[in-house]
Amino acid sequence: VPKTVLIRGVGPSLNALGVSGTLSDPVLALYKTPNSPTSTAVKLEENNDWGGNERLLAAFRQVGAFPLESQASRDSAMLVTLVPGNYTAQVSGSGGTTGIALVEVYGLP
View 1: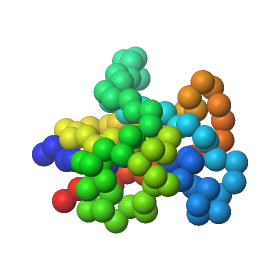
View 2: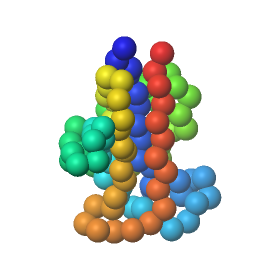
View 3: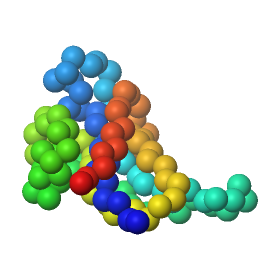
């Protein structure tokens, strides 16, 4: 059955947790991974700067995720409903920047 998940690409908010060298502007992309090695992955969704979305804030609280630095932080997040299958969440730096990032995936009840 389909499942709703919260996926976050956290970079700047890791600074408050004592992590240095974080990715300042993570871009989160979600791909449907093909079952066949000859097929190409399909990008389903992308987020750059989560923007303080109220629906995402409610999901953060619901799953017990640590709060992001602020509603204006450059961290990325998405709430998606996925059918069973294989998926890949990828975090990259906006403009080719590099640094430490954390990818989180939470199943919503």
